[in-house]
Length: 375
Image (cartoon, rainbow, N blue to C red; front, top):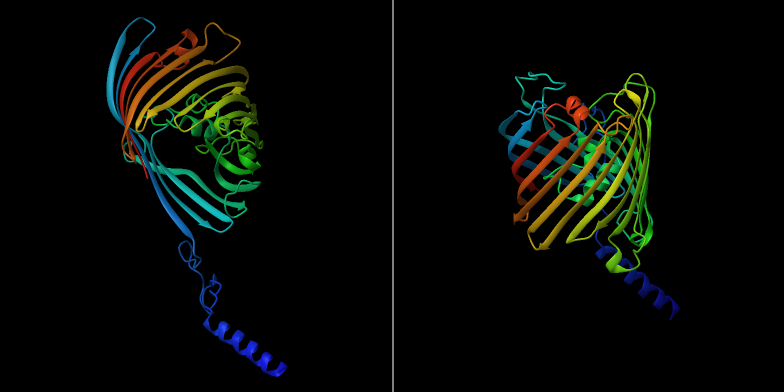
């Protein structure tokens, strides 16, 4: 009886094993024996990688009137490609890589001629490899590390709350106080149950548009905390803080930044205010200044979008009544199709005497018609 039972179990197990699908063999990452790998192995991997291309374009027509210190004015109008980003993401289990190319004018530093006249050319905006754990996003702890040309920590958090880059960039970027990306590495620790994340980064410090000019490296620490994440209605409330310890230029000039903000990262309403203090600006490590910013993005009904932003930038506290810039912008837009948004915007920039001398043409107002598409 025991032998009969054993034989029946053995036959049943053998039959189940025969019917089971064959395991997927491990992809062979090496070239065949006797052959060298190609000069670049991009695209040769047999891993089941999830590849996702992307595209973002912001184009605008702008009418601009500028005023000089003598009381005169002049106007100009132009069609501009504000942003042209092409991206590709690759993800396989715990690893991820991303590359972003952006279109820029080839001239720089006030030159009138660049590559092939002043052509639009492509440069690297992001190019990094990363590791994340766990493999899929959960409500628990999560760690992500990146290395290469990586997004920094402060500007992406504020811009990701604003979500109206088509209207205007984050003031920390437009004033040159911080760069949105740099060569280096970052690590992010996601807190459980949506309570936020804590991040750290180490960079060359000159921004992704410039090569390193000194031996110093920049350290950035940042945190976004949702103190009321336990309550669903209050979960969008966030407290943000960051500090950058850095240097700039061949003279190793001080370039430290401290930023704090109160944000609301809701679906219909996204708003916030932030304050930044800067020790050092450009090659002047002794110059100190501060920037206060307030913004709101409201979508009262589906597809209809309103936005407003204002900031006050004290460029140099050594001349507080003479060296500052005020800026305000208002915009209204409509999401025509899911990928396409159209905006009308009006903005005004008001510099004081010293600031206007340092920033020629900054005393101006403009009227813009903007198209934004993202895939």
